[in-house]
Length: 351
Image 1 (cartoon, rainbow, N blue to C red):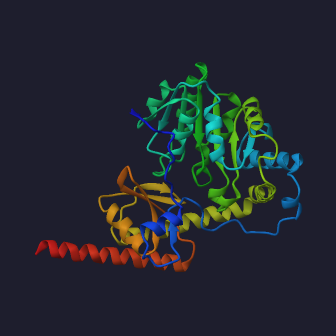
Image 2: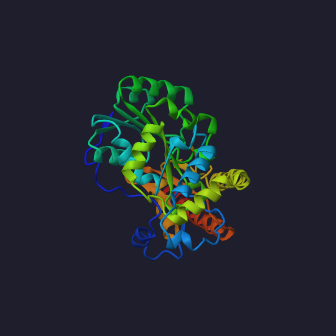
Image 3: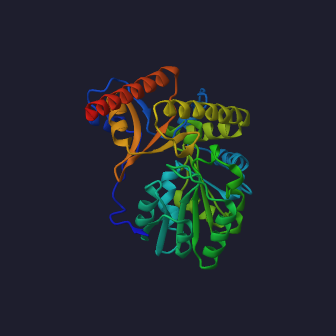
């Protein structure tokens, strides 16, 4: 168990082109940003009705969104859905659903969960083994996990939830990447039993992170409690419009899952061509733990290709999918230049 001191401090994330420019000031522009797990092929944009911007959101639209989200994610009903301006704003509110106690986060994972639990007053620690969560008042895990794609089976999650529920504890499962994960392992359909909150992110799979839309799936009393904390008009008019249309568009979703799977295969093949090992991930990102990670991060960044690195784990990278053929070519060129530099360095060392 790793105690997390200073967990309330701000966390560095991928996707900041400002930080990338400061780190690689001479890199060719624009950056190819592969540092997030956001789908580079966004849901098609459409003309919003003027009322989405000129009027306060209607309660009827929010109910419609909850109904569609329940169907899309497999929640028992709309009453089990709390919609928010992104899951990020939900994290400390969900952590506050139980009295301050021991919060255990299955890591390594998305750092904001530990920070949110600390904000809610919990003593936070990271565990590396799933069974270590059993002693928690608040247990948190990401499924599939970010950044390595690890999946915990549903049966094990339900057993843990029952154990926590018997002691007035709470299991929080962040399913931000379940849209491209094994849906049969989702707990969305089981939240009615209580003691479980499932988080679902809209922006990642639909490639619309700027819309700021996310959901907490829970028993109706818990969902109502979260709604009360968020207050009226929490979800903006444009987010309602996009959420309602995209979550109902099952044809687009099915085609996109197929496309992402194909492009992930292409990315794996490209990385393998330059001896970069892929050790996991999802079809929105790949997990690359290997000794050459620091040099690859620097070489790609200098070429204007940004991938996710982790200050506390310098031998790990995460890489997302290029969004166009031009971006694929830039990534391949940067990888080839890095590989050539390594070969030259090896030959020089061998002299």
